[in-house]
Length: 95
Image (tube, rainbow, N blue to C red):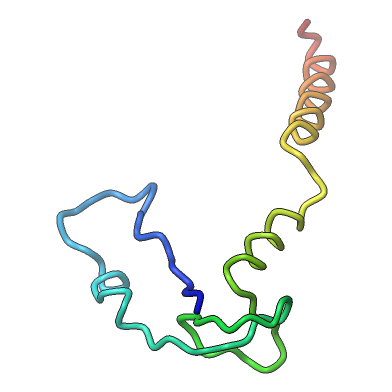
């Protein structure tokens, strides 16, 4: 049975030597709920109780869904940014 695991890393936060109340309990204390993946039908566990109107995915299907959800590529994003910068530079008469 697949298990949903969250990263324990806390990027971008200062380490004050103690954890905040939000992170003070062990992540394994969460009540795991057995569900069936809405995409492939595999049995898996999630650390929350799902609502009946939202789909729940196994790790594999969730990863596939996340990768295909955006039609923009990083290269396309950079092209858009460069176009905007060129317009700004032209307006400011910077070349």
